[in-house]
Image (cartoon, rainbow, N blue to C red; front, side, top):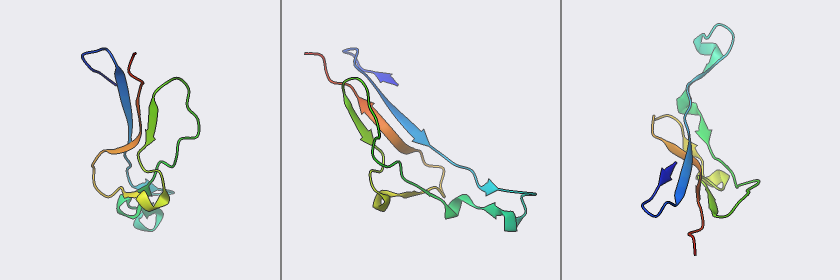
Length: 82
């Protein structure tokens, strides 16, 4: 969460991943993160004022999880006070 000089706060949720393993974690039981992608989808619910923005609103906007870059899952910026 960040708060600007006027006292308005905003936030961004991020996502990251490690390789997925099952059983003994052998190569045959592991899905490397280079094979994974993420998309947040549209917001399903919201309370309060402000604008919620999905990180990736559609499957076409899915992002590879192969690099350690931060990816936005969702962010919110409240309405400015009148």
